[in-house]
Length: 171
Image 1 (cartoon, rainbow, N blue to C red):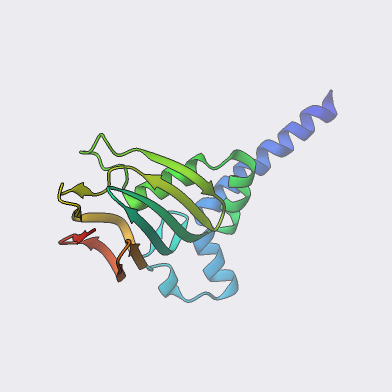
Image 2: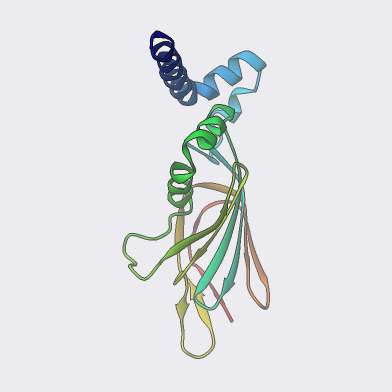
């Protein structure tokens, strides 16, 4: 009985220690292995996620997003142990879907791991009824270093952007 209690106490202590490390991982990493301070102020950092690129395959009013990112090593362990729901929630906050004023936007994840996520978002565009569509102004929660929208006819590429000010038309 005492052995079981001791093991439970050890696991609880390890869990709390991992949570503390997850909150201070960037400070520990920069001080211990000499990562330059500019990575701390990187504008593509959102919580424990560092966004590398976003690829959106737009078809009609719907889009399939693929987000490439990296996460803090301590958080990788937590994702492995406790699941991916917090990771999914943070990804949706970064991409800013579903938008709060649009109830028709539905998000369905197809794949999530510690370096990449793919998900499908319904109703990101506006149907102009004449066979053309409009992707309206959209703001992300962080800067996206490489953002690509792929349509049937062309690719719309943005570098180091946080807001798509005017949107764009496609067919």
